[in-house]
Image (cartoon, rainbow, N blue to C red; front, side, top):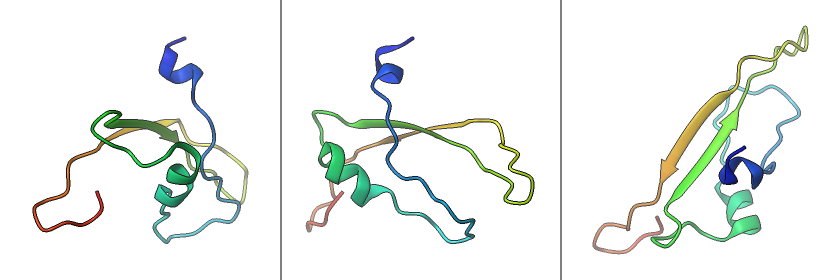
Length: 76
């Protein structure tokens, strides 16, 4: 088990199926603080669930990397 996997926890659980984009940033920032140059990578995994059968897809893995805001401000 890797250290990153051992620290994993749930950020956003969506109970009802939706075709809308799901923004997890606010929940992540509330739990861990905003990403920064000191901790630039966030790894996450997710899966889809068929609401009719309860069947779960394979686990999807993703990574995002913090980048400094462009000149002129703005939140990363």
